[in-house]
Amino acid sequence: MNRCECPMDLTLGCITTQAALSARAFLSRRLEDNGIDMTIEQFKVMVVLWKEKSSTQQNIADFVGKDKTSVTRLIAGLEKRSLIQRTSDKSDKRCNLVTLTPQGIALETPTMAVLSEASAFVHKNIDPKELEITLRVLQTMCQTLTTTINSSKEPS
Image 1 (tube, rainbow, N blue to C red):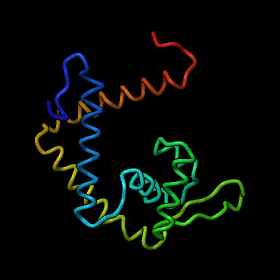
Image 2: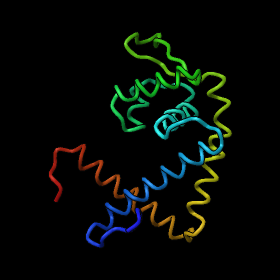
Image 3: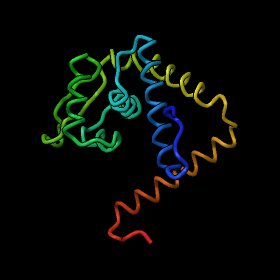
């Protein structure tokens, strides 16, 4: 059985997990093939910064879905490679602001081009209407589960 074949009794959870793992491995390989030395976790941090220009470590942790300690390690690795820098927030000394360096800014265009090409390849055999429905269903599922996790109510 290959990585994308799941027994029928494990369908949704198994298939979504395997699809995510396969897509992650594919994107990692495409980044590497294009000379971009970045893990998927580091990529997620960079996406936040490319969008926001500057962010707190906590905001990055919330977006990436990792604890603050894990994000601190990711940020340290990116900082060591001179892609980002940390400074104390002037309004709250307890917070670090993370910002892009010129090298980090320059990496956005080639990295997002790789993401775009990888996404196009992954979606090439999927009917656009079916993809739209699939994305909507998965977003609804995520919202339902997030709401349930964040509320004190038991699922009904």
